[in-house]
Image 1 (cartoon, rainbow, N blue to C red):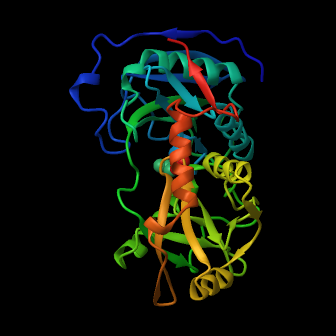
Image 2 (image 1 turned 135 degrees about the vertical axis):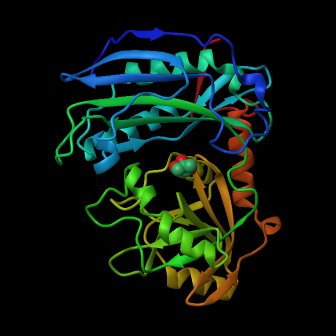
Image 3 (image 1 turned 180 degrees about the vertical axis):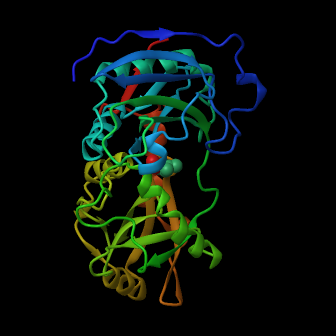
Length: 356
Ligand code: COI
């Protein structure tokens, strides 16, 4: 996986950054000036280029479109009060991209291509990193198979691309979730533990049904017994019951979320009791009824912390404690923001500075 691939740079003639308020744009719809594109062919990575963001020619027979050999990452860059840009836990996203690549029979992306490409891209597009307290530059690295062929087989050619978009809040309000026991996000032996595009495609229909009933998201259960919570929407899910933080343990149906691991690290730093294990629906509803469930929230790169204030199950709605009474998750949210904005010591060395 070693590589010393050169990255060509073609700069945009005139930046588009002043065409909108990057501190106030809808998530994922406005893209920074440049993108990185690298090709894999003849068994090696080649033609790495940073170029103006734009459309690329492609064949409608391209294999990713038909058979879903497509994986991605989500990560974020932040600007501190001095105007310096840093990326949050880039190494972890890099490693997970390659874990996804292995599971999807795709070539791994060399570390220097990923890291140097990312840093060069962010140096060029540093003006796109929001300065607002809640703002960040969302970074979307992805890998797609590009063979022009309809036969089902492992592709011989791929493209690795990084695009970026300024982002604010992902959810504007706390969410209500519906326990989903008919459709599953992931199954044993499947690809739920990696960031495969198909995991998201398959979630859309059940999510639409939940939204028609007034919920913003579903909370997924395990496909074998429907007794245990797995994730919520596109996020890992956590509960505070009594004084313990509880979250489903990692398995082949749970994504090893970077935000998940950051939340757990902070909880442990603060001496909180943490349990990573199966979390049954029964224990959560019993805790709601006894009043011992203090908090429920989703965590992921896009949202950081999404407060869950209601859970629907079997035709009944359960109200959870109001966000104003929650102690742990708002503190996590604030602490992560302070570390990312350079206002609090980065004890875990999560931030990687982008040289000016
Ligand atoms: C994330 O929060 O990292 C996600 O994967 C959500 C994304 C699909 C928008």
